[in-house]
Each structure stands twice: as structure tokens, then as C-alpha cells.
Image 1 (cartoon, chains in turn green, blue):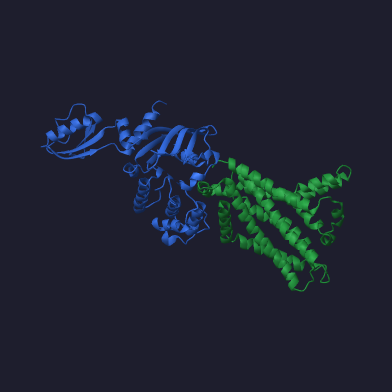
Image 2 (cartoon, chains in turn orange, green):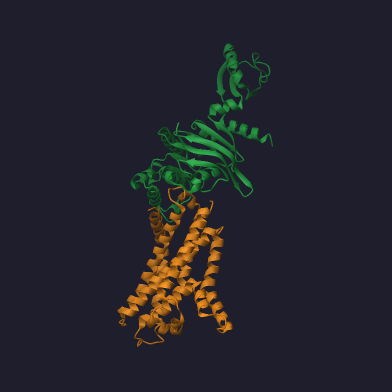
Length: 275
Length: 306
């Protein structure tokens, strides 16, 4: 109950601060331009326009959603402490884990709203402009939106963990940017380099799977690009889709784990913190 | 006498710095206690300990039946707290902020909003807190602390930034609540303000409780002289009245006023003499040691052994 009160206040604040508006506009703008500009090379004869959009949008999501999630979450514990609002909040009959859960629900709601609306617009625009969309594509698209929100939840939780541990806001922001660079850009390049060097001698498929599971953005990528046969054809990952032994439920479970473990650790770190 | 807050042998270290050392006191219902001490004396630390925001290194605290250090918070529904530099989320309006805190305390929102009018924030309630002045934020801080029917009020420097009129209202409200059974612990630098109002005074110095009692008790303990001021006619500018006992420290103030420092046991005797020699004494003032002087005395007496 208290967590819901906190969540509603977070949503209220995000609306007031125009976070919701900014995130929705950003996602909608990019999704729409990818949808229409992105189909230029394939031409309008592309029968499965929505599948192409899933491929391009999920690549966009990997860059953008973690960044937005970290932006709204990195400040929410250490920032409230520095501003002094946490002091007053914690003098109320509310447990620290309830504060954290409330913030999580609030931020997740904001992110889910922006993602559903922004990406939904792109799908709607495609259908309105007359592209044929079949059920398989719609399912893949819905799964993409759902998993994007889940990816957001992962990074909101990671942001809280950093925020609960960091000594000041600047440190939290710095660590978050570093982590974003690492997980979104560097990790895959390093992995690719490693695979190229190894030439398949030591790194088995199992090890590779484990390495992919260690990065939530890779889990997300695997889920969206290999989970649906119609999509993986366009993603150029049909080969990988056959070789990977990670099923869609397993990947979703991995994303859940990536949410709950950092969130639990954040609650633990926050409960031990003195202010 | 029902206790609402128990602080027993509490010590708090920040690293190697001792913020509070072995402090014990109880708060009973209807008590209004002033916590005084200079900056860094441990006042804010004590309040944070009572709220469970920090945990004590040694000792134990009980607030409305909860152990705050263990994260228990059921009693906090009946606790009001005003931090020293209160701050709110700038994006929300005063009314939204007050409503949010009322919901957290599970108290009726409409009643909580009436408090905004009481602290004089009515016209500004629809404005964002970010546009408020320091005094207005302080008012909002008071309004949120009074939500519901607090049984314990912890107020850290509550009157800073308030104008004299609102100070008056504030003390009236606090005194009414105390009369109805609320325990009030308030820290302040405005000692003259507290002098007539606080039933009990706790003086802190470097994290150590150096005095605890009603002002009368502290006066007795401190044995500070009462100042007796006389307006005496017909004296030369440096002459003292002949009937003064020898050895009583006295001085002349601006020409015609004689000020005598009377030790507690001399006081009545001196007054007898003054009235016996009534012919030359035109006016008389008795000034007991003020809280300021008591405070200075207790601080000095604890500095001595160092």
C-alpha cells in the first residue's frame, strides 16, 4: 500500500518534470523514422514490413532503453538523500524496501508507457499506411515491446543498486555511464574479438551461451532476434538461432533474474545505509 | 507517567568521531522538552537515532514501542518529524506534497490540507514547492509534521525562518498538542523563546548530556546568582548603598541603577534589607538567571575538567 503511494508520486513527478513526454516523444520519433526510412532499402515490396521493424527497433532499444532507465534511476536514492527529501520520507511509516519498490513500480510504469506508446505508434502507422501485417509478426512485435519494458526494468534495478551504493550523485552518474558503455558497446565487441581469436578451439557453445547470459542486452537481443523464425531470417541470425540452446522462456527468466537480483541487492544496500 | 520515548545509554560513532556518548533520557506524555546545544553537539544525531535513520553504536532506543534501529515503524504513524533543513520535491505543489504525506500516514487528506491554512500557506498551496521561499518551506515542514494526531513530535530547529507572528502560532499549536498528551522534543538556538515554554531542558555538549531538568532545577543546580536591580535615589555616582552586606558583588549601571548578584541563599535576606531601607529605593527588579546564562554555565562547567 505504502509502495503504491510512493509509486503514484513518482509517476506524478515524472509527468510534471516532462520525463514521460520526453521519453515518449524520443521513442516514438525514432521508431517512426526507423519504420519509414528503414524500409527504404528493401522497398515497399517487403511483405513482412513489421518483422523488419522488429529487427531495427530492437537494435535501437538496446542502445536507448538502458540509457533512459539509468537516467531516471541512478539519482533516485543518492539524489534524494543529497536533496534531503529521503530524510523526511523515511520518518514516515514506510519501510525502506517499500520506498524502493514504490520507486521501481513508478519508474517502470513511466518506461512502459513511453515504450508501448512510442513503439505502438510505429506499428499503427505501418498498418495505417497499408502494409500487410500477419499474426506472427504482431506476436513478434508485442514480444519485442514486452521484452523492451523488461530490459528497462533490468536497468532501472541496476541503476538503483548503483544509487544505493554510491557516495554522491556524481559518482552514481559516472558509474552508470561506464556501465552502459560496457554492457551496450564494449561487451559485444570484446566477445566478438575473443571468438575471432579463439577460432572455436576453446570456447564451446555452452560457454558462449553463458557469456551471452552475463549481459542483459545480449539476452534481450537473443530473445528478439532468434526467438521468432520470421524475424531471425531478417536479422541474419538464423544460423545462431539454430545453434543456441537457449529457449525463449529461459531468456525471459534470465531477464527476470537480471531484474530481481540487482533490485534485491539494492534493497539490501539501502537498508544498511545511514543518512 | 507514560513514557513515549526511551533513550538508554546511547553512543553513536561516525568512524572515529563520537557524535553522541552515553546519553540517556526518557520522554513522557505531555512533556515539552527543549534540546539545546551548539552546532555539532549531537542534537540532530539523537533525532535521527530515534527515527532509525542511523543505528546506535551502543545502547538502545524505544520510540512508541518500536525499536527504530531494527526497522520497526508501526509507531511512526503517530510521530511527526521536522528536519533541520527540510526539503521537498520541487516539482509538486504544496497541496500535492501534503496529500502525499497524509496518504503515507493513512490519515484523511482533507484534514491534512486544513493544516496548510493553519500555517498560512493557503494561498500558496497550489504553487510548486520549487518556487517557495525558505520560510514557506519551513511552514510546509510544520504542516506535514502535524498530520494526524502525533503522539511524539521531533522538531529540529522548528522556528528558524519563521516570522514572529507564525512563531507565536506555532508555539500555541505545540503547547495545545502537549496539553493533550503529545511528547514534544524540540531543538533550538532561540533560548529566550524556549525559556517560558519548555517544561524541561536537556543541554548537550560535544555529544554528552550535561544537564537535564526543569529550568528551576537547573537554576538550583547551577547556583547562579539572581540579579537584583535597584533604583536608588540620593547616591553619588560611584557610591553603593551602605546597607549592602559586604562581599556581595554589585555594580552601578548607567548612573542610578545598582545591580547586585545575589546567591540563591542570600536572595531573601537581601530583599528584606532593600525593603527595610525603603526610603531610598524607588524601584526594584529581580532577574533570575536566564536560560542563556544557564546554558553558558553548564557548558563551561563541563569544559573545565578537560
